[in-house]
Image (tube, rainbow, N blue to C red; front, side, top):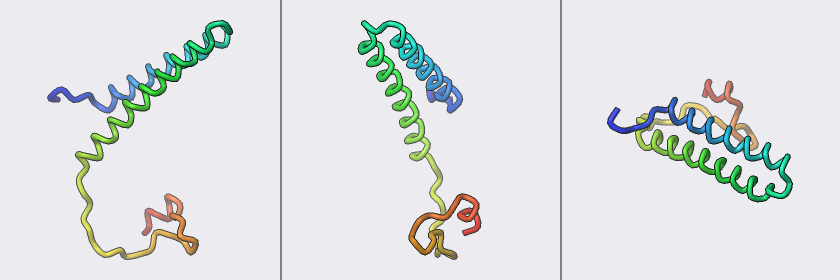
Length: 92
C-alpha cells in the first residue's frame, strides 16, 4: 500500500473528527461560560474533517484516468443551459 491511507480509513477519520466536533457542540450547550471556546474547537475539528476529505478527493482526481476526448453526440444541457438531471445525463 506504499504509505497511502485507504478511502475507508479516511472516511473513518472523518467520522471520528465529526463525532468529536459534535461532542464539543453538545458540551457547549451545557456549559455557557465555556461555549465560545468549545464551539471554536468544534469548528476546528469540522475543518480538519473537511481538509481530510478534500485531500483525499484531490489525490483521487490526480490519479484518475482521463476519459477519451471525442465528439459530443448529444447535448447534456436543456434549453436554459442548465445541466439535465442525473438520469437524463446518463443517456447523453
